[in-house]
Image (cartoon, rainbow over all chains, first blue to last red; front, side):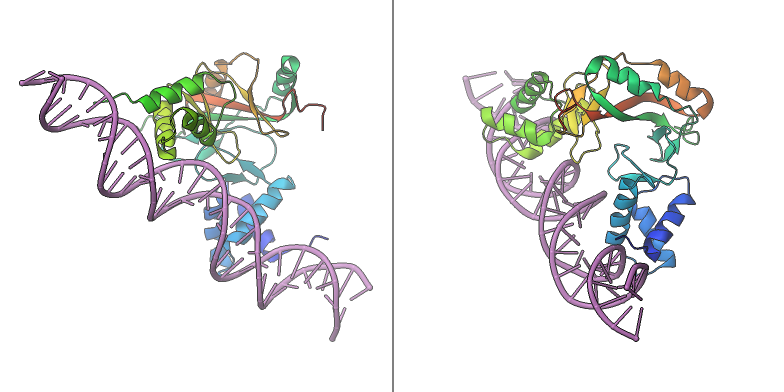
Length: 127
Length: 127
DNA sequence: AACGAAAATAGTAACTGTTATTGTTTTTAT
DNA sequence: ATAAAAACAATAACAGTTACTATTTTCGTT
């Protein structure tokens, strides 16, 4: 039987109030500001759990640490080679890709992740 | 000034003779069969280096360990939730996606990775 | 072919992100 | 209010990877 916790509520609130696709450490730091004794394990445990429940999204962006996203409608991302940021791409999600992939492959497709690499608007042009 | 090494030559030969998108440990095991004193550090060092030089491909498939691919013409992959395998998808690479992404985003796109998740042909249907 | 500087290696220690463990606290149905 | 279940804080353990150091290999020069 599942029970609420102030820690998980705060975590979700923090994650939903940013667009920065943070990693566990960033979330931990924000949590500590309001709840100084929260432990890193709790952050990891709840991030995993919420992701498994489909309440948040876990992103694998090829950098060392996993990133998380409070926005769960399917969309694509760019990992910026300049500043390391992960930003949402303003382009339509293409559910057709799944069918296209299933067509000749013999695979059972459940979903896809499309990750662009390059430079975010702030870093483009600069270097 | 760059120098060849028997270790790196063997590594590349091994990687090019398989289609299984192995991780560092797998490569290490195959290396040891033919070169019993090779060290794991050497495997990691050369995998990174070859990937940086664009001679091989480093894949980030959301599992714990990075995977590597001796085939560098751009193509897409599926990470199988059943057996953990990473398989090539028989579908055309879409260079247009880069332009589409660049269009409204203000980003400078260098490339993209498209990863499907689901089940590979062997695992599809089974469970 | 031998020499020597630069590059690469083997072996090992260290580091990073994450998960597991354990004893305590919090939650919630009764 | 009670007590069982769930979640927690703190910390240890773990996996994958990188860094270090002393030794070996490569290869241009002699």
